[in-house]
Amino acid sequence: MPETTIDAQRQYNGEKFTAKEIARTENSKTVCGYFEPGQFIPVHAPDSDVTIVIQSGQGIVRDGETDHRVAAGSVVTVPAGKKRGVRADGERLEAVLVTAPPPTEVEHDPVRRGIKQGEFEPDLDE
Image 1 (spheres, rainbow, N blue to C red):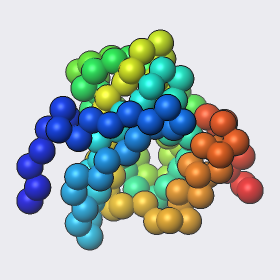
Image 2 (cartoon, one colour):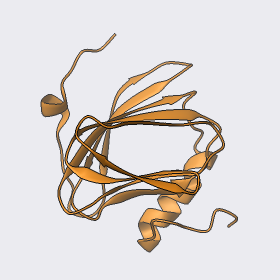
Image 3 (cartoon, rainbow, N blue to C red):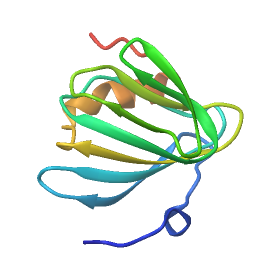
Image 4 (cartoon, rainbow, N blue to C red):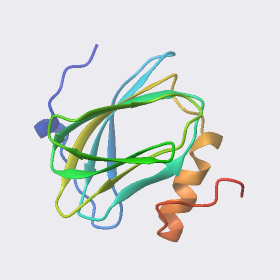
């Protein structure tokens, strides 16, 4: 089992959020996410649960049709099949995201499309 810290994994990218995978098993995936203000993980709805723990900063976590305002210490869990997304709001945001089971490459197509198009809410039916 790997051991690390948010500080050790910290990496920012001026173009898009950074996801540093720190662990993966057949049943789960854990990443540290680093967001500059305004950066986001586009809304998507994979068949996996996700728990998002905000380490620092502030932002929005989409949970179905609800936007949760989050800050350091916030914990949001979104069940499998529900729309979810994360966006930094006004300052850098750092979070740990645990998905179970890990999403498939196909389930992440809306994420790649949303980043490419600069859209937090890409069309999920494309």
